[in-house]
Length: 347
Image 1 (cartoon, one colour):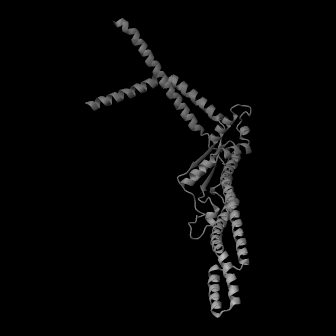
Image 2: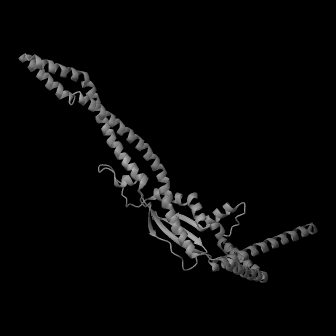
Image 3: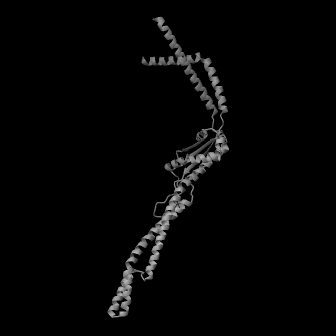
């Protein structure tokens, strides 16, 4: 019984809707035709835009020295490996940077190209808004990054897309090089200081060598043995000579051992600093591509925007829907007024 009532109510509502549309068919037809004509005119006035696309994969290698000059027993980066999610996010941040946006806008004079008044107080805001609406950077499901550029000039769209891809490398390299140059300066200072320390140690060692100290342990042992033999033989001349040698060894032996150990450590540190210095110098002066280009942009042969038939259809149906809602509201208001007028008479 309940299902029959629901079905009857549904049929009744459907009939009411059809009756309502039929009742107001003439105004709705007029509104629909007017909306169709107006949307056609608007769609035809919209400038056509062409889309060019570049697809990139970020490189996983940031340090050339770690990729190419690292020791064999250390973990080495693969210079040919594609970057993953983290590298793709970094690439997107760089592509959305003010540096790239400013350089593109200035290089191609986009303010004039977009028809923005250079005397307008909000000229930069309008320029950047227009730039954002025409340039799209997004990550794909394959961890690549897609650069899409829309413009009324298909040739310009492709050139800008390829240029943005190129500017990614120069921007990232500039950021990294600023840091690499500072690192190089610090390592270079430490390396040169260590070279000076080693040279000073070598000079001091040469002074001790001039006193006849070359190998404290072996010299001390051999001289002591010779001294004992000379005493046993009663060779006073040899004893006097060996006593002088033992005095010199005793006087400078400790300094020699200390200097030798210190010089060993200094040279060891110098070798480590030399390796770091060479790595820092390579990172600061050499360049590797920061991306893999899967496909470059080319001038589009057909427009991508606007899709005029969608604009016309959506605009027409939206206008009709708005007209129907407006008519319903007017009828409901009219009905409420009539009920209010009739109420006192019935009382």
